[in-house]
Length: 301
Ligand code: LIP
Image (cartoon, rainbow, N blue to C red; front, side, top):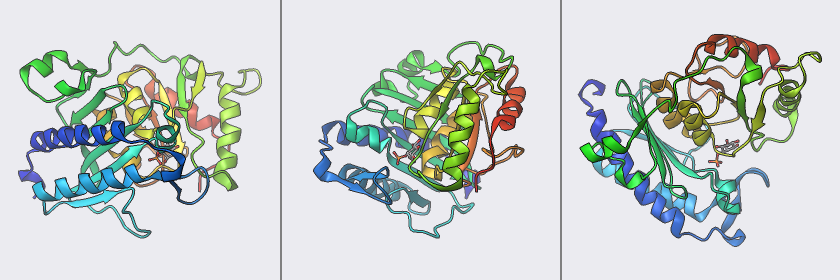
């Protein structure tokens, strides 16, 4: 089935679905009364997350009835990503930001085939910015997202990623790095994060990497798009799900970035393995991956 898929048509449908979702998000009032809690007080869901996912799954099913669907709000423990063509959707990535009206919020829509991200669309309706990629066709950023189709006029307005000539990365000390605390605030993985964040910032004399800075914007998909754009150099997290990263990985890889294991040593990692390190395109990429791995204090479980 995969050989016959018109990926450009899938991309264009995902772009139009993303715009509809964006209208739902900007029209919503995510007051605390409509905010639910999933596993703890740092893991939020709103009625808008659920309504957007319903609209997305219904629309995609109408157009591609044979494709599988995986979404954050309908996932059941034990559900597995299979090699079948699968739409992977995070209706609102950055739900905590959405609740607080902090602007880093997006919908993340991907298509994976053979468990590999092939098409990715990430749309932030609050900044009207859209990133997208189709495998083999390059990755693009559209700042006037109403133009984010592949018509001639839109192509003229699109910016190919990375946005700048990728400068060399001599080592981690020149890097701006995204990390996230996630919603798990206890146990081994929380300890690995806390110790590693400190070491990334510490001086070289103290055994650290002394990165330019750490950033936590609260959206995995947007972090990956910023690494693809070259506005962040690296992004490390454990605890994400396939819906947080599928679309962003399609975009990152098309921009020349790498997505590797968030534990030291793994150059190959699946989008459902729940830990990753992303590094932008540019000379020194491999060295930055290896230096980053050497900074990790422990291993994620
Ligand atoms: C969030 C991620 C964020 C991560 C959170 C959560 P949500 O997704 O994008 O980077 O740190 O744990 O998974 O819940 O807003 O869709």
